[in-house]
Length: 152
Picture (cartoon, rainbow, N blue to C red):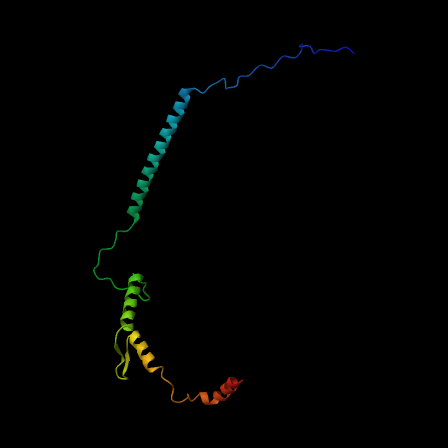
């Protein structure tokens, strides 16, 4: 069989395309675009600033004037909120510490006093805890059951 060679008839070679864009952007168009964009942004900022000033002035006109300053104001009804809870807690703890570490009367007519904690602990170590002289009146009915439970 004879060899056939392809002939170049009927098929044109594709044109060789350049490796870059043939048409470039015009520098003048780019400069005009970016300058216009900058001007538009500045106009928007100035417009927002003017709008906020207008709205702030309008809101100030709508607000009632502050009441005149009075020296004595009546207290609000109970319950009142704590204005300075940290200071209140410090005062409470200071009063408690004063009571815990000082001598004073609890009930003068009954002869009941309070003493500092350290002194009370020393007295308990010296004297021991007080013992009951007689059992309570209620324990007589339940003492049988306690004794029975205790014996087991």
